Image (cartoon, rainbow, N blue to C red; front, side, top):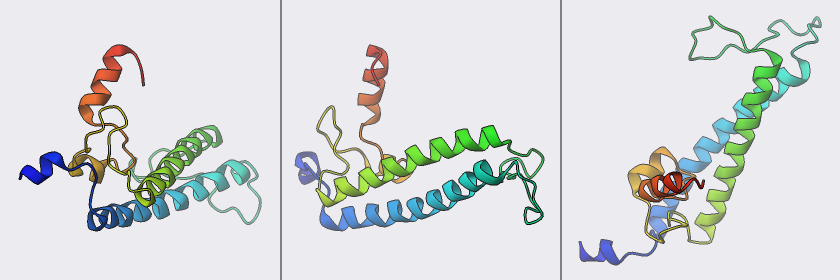
Length: 134
């Protein structure tokens, strides 16, 4: 256990585990981004080939439909998420993945599995929020 305390980076095996998680999320995020982008580009056309002019989200069980504007906002958020995941892959390649950019400590694996693009420990994030930085 003393090794874990002194550990300054994740092992190559651990980094590979995170890489697989990130690549899976990245594939799903890109698919969703492409779908949202199509809605933004073609959502208002209502041409013959468009039998479903709006995107129904899974969360709302199809009760609400996204407008072109909402799809655009979601696409922007998804694009940012994709860029963050791609940056995480670069950190894996550089073997700096999982190291808090404020404290230099390892971000717990549980947090990285939930938020694989995280660059801060929860404590560092809370500290920055209190200082009004983010």
